[in-house]
Image (cartoon, rainbow, N blue to C red):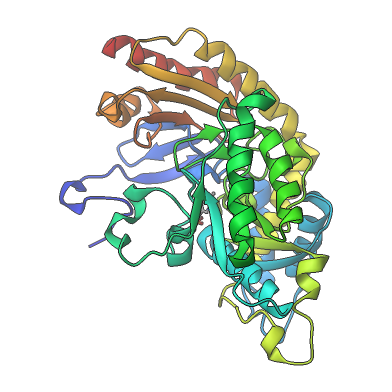
Length: 416
Ligand SMILES: *Cc1c(COP(=O)(O)O)cnc(C)c1O
């Protein structure tokens, strides 16, 4: 019997079964077709069953599907590393592959802690993270996350180091609203930096932790403070990467290069699990030496799987060829237009950025039954807590997008 994620299995019977996908449409066993509003946990950016991706995969499968990266290399891995260095913020020149976002985060944290050790510092091992952050479900990733729904059973085992506030006021917040969070970070670093290895954030948008959006001014200040107090800055772009916030990477909103950056989810267009942890020259060079002592002792069995690298490369190619950033801009315009007319005293906030639309309700109970309601109307959406969000595949057409938002509107109207 299959055990499902984030699920009280007692109530898990009779889940809808998907049998085929075409573009943004998900086809169910009973014949129903749903427009995908969340890109399968934000990964399926080109939609399902994409002919170009399928062909690239079949071609690579005809050569070899996988080979260990220990002691061998191959063209898809080399090319994907090169492509990632080219498209990510300048200075991130070294790419370590792993098989999921959580592991990509683990690699980032191990890299940061070992960096200081390699340089001869003792005790710079603690990690600062943001309130409401989410960085994955493995142990160290849980430690730097701040969502008790995901980790309450392990509260006694997890050693949370330092959590700081996110700035108020959203993306366009004036400097004086952002400053208190910057001050808090600086105070923490002033008194603790000799123990701190890194500061990890989801840049601009915190996704699973409630879709909070914050100012790029904060990231710029964080970059300066990390430099000043000798702390590495890690951007977890597993959710925000590949255009989701309207820039190819959210770091670009701030014009900041982190010391370490993690990408995942949309990296492989939702075809298979993979992540990459990128580092600057300074970080990478600290690992060079005569012995294994300084080396990064990590190596997931399926890192740089050849099918995975092939589909990721093709996905990046499609993204660039078809000018997805302008598609994402259009998606954002439509979200804003359509959200304008969704109003209710039960709504706490509406916000959007790039291809993300969020309606936050005052109470999670107001979304009870929403998923079934949406399915009845041909739309696949799955709220998180009190947040109803939309993160469609970038290939979505205007009328399909409006249909999804129309379902949100109907739900709000009928519950008001
Ligand atoms: C989903 C997510 C992760 C974890 O990725 P998995 O592939 O599910 O392990 C890490 N960080 C962020 C920001 C995410 O959204």
